Length: 227
Figure 1 (tube, rainbow, N blue to C red):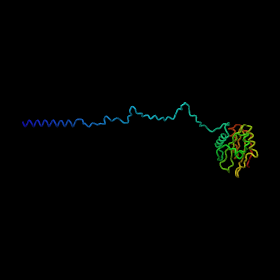
Figure 2: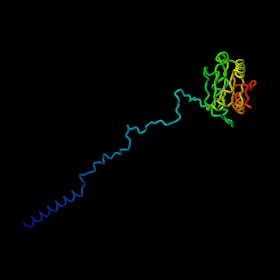
Figure 3: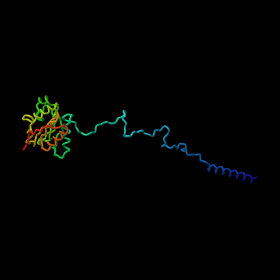
Figure 4: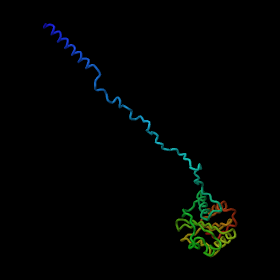
C-alpha cells in the first residue's frame, strides 16, 4: 500500500515537472507589441504630399505668352534724339578711342541762366533758334576742355547758332583760370551744332563722330588757336 502511494506521488511529481517544462518552452506571453506598430514612419501615406511643388524652372512663361522685351541694347543715338542723348553717345565714342580725354563731368543740359558762360548764347538767341543745349566740361577748372551740342529748330537755325557762338561776344575761350584751350571749333550738321574747346586731336575726333551721328557736316569754323 505504501509502495502504491509512493508511485502515485512520483507520477504526480513527474506530471507537474513536465507541465512546468512545457510552460517554460512555450511562446512567451511577452510578445513584441511593436510588431503591429512597426510601420515605417518615412513611408508616405496615401494623403501625404511629398512633392513640394517648388517651381525652379527659370523659363517662366508670361501670361500673354510673350517674351521679356527689356531693352539691353547699346547707347547708339539716332540724330533725331535730343542734344543730351547725342552728346552722351559722342562722349562714349570718344572714350573708346586711344586719345587722352580729360576726366569730365557727366553731360547735362545747360540751364538758361548759364547759357552765355557755358554756351556763348543769350537768352534771346536761345528762344529764337534753339530747342536744347547740353555740355560736358573737365572736372577740374584748371583744365580747358568742354564739348557743347546745340539742338536747333532747323538747319537754318543751326547755321545761325554756329555763327553767333564763333564771333566776338559769343563763346569765351578765355573763361578758364590761367589756362586756355589749344583750339575752339564750331560745326553744324542738320539741325545740330557741335562746339569743342580743348586739344586739337580731341576736336578732330569729335567732329568725325559728330558727322556720323548727326549727318553730313558743313564748314568747320576754328575761332581760337592758342599758339
